Image (cartoon, rainbow, N blue to C red):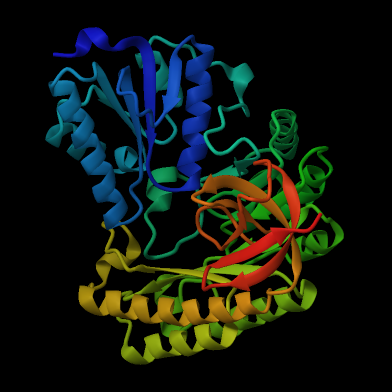
Length: 436
């Protein structure tokens, strides 16, 4: 038994899933620290008395990873390597009763909006004066910046509204205060996240207010990049593009998950758009902001997807030439509208179709990267890896997009911007030298 070696009131927070979960963990960690807990994120020391697992329940693979992690720490508790195990987040919100029955060694389960109750269980106070503040777990120079919670969209395949609830926008003045706090801590890049950026403001301002928010965040001294993630295509507020053109510190970048292009698929997915409208939207993006990098996400193997539907998506991907693209295989999620449909595309066909799309995208990425050779870009450096400093241009988000590699023979300070001339390019990496 190792219980006696554990640090009393030390908490290890383990985060699974998306950037929204990272944000939530950072808020929770700040509250714990204010209550005199010692807090680490994904600690390797294994000396924490308490473990809190922030889970993901999005698709099958994510759910399995969350379950495996819970079981791992439940076993650690049984062996005396931790004293208390708590579970929060999306999986816990959605499957609490099942998890309580199947994994009784966990001390308590909490939903996505139950931070005050979790803190109370730990005999800690929820400090309202800390709203908007958090402990950053990313490198100090960038931070995920959640502007809304929940989602009102009716997408047939998505269980997120079941786990995150209805859309709730955070007021602009509160977000500006948070941005100033982050800038004071040295954060230079804000990565705006929500289940749906497009919907921002409709609930509290009765209009789409993303452009208004961007203007005010853009004025915050010290914030050099603002990046947009997870915009919904239907009802996209086009004035956002005007702000993007006007303001140098708003990256010419957007992450807009489109999911499919076949009209029968879009209709069944309840996306509220069509192939024609989708193609017109992308054309409008490129007309208004010609050098914009567009990232999208697609789904392969949705119920009823024929080879004809898929080939239509395949051709569209070839012709549209997205800068960045990811693809999921369809996951049949209970209590969603699509769960009423037959999951009739075999798993191996889903995987094969997804790979076909990624092969196309790999070639597109290679071609687009070759066009960058000889050009100079402003690069923000994130880390050191092997023989290189690794950074990103304004057209790349951390973790998911291309990277710029500069030899360690040239000195770079992490978290700083430098001008880099690109000397050669691979499918997803650019190699360059500092020129300023």
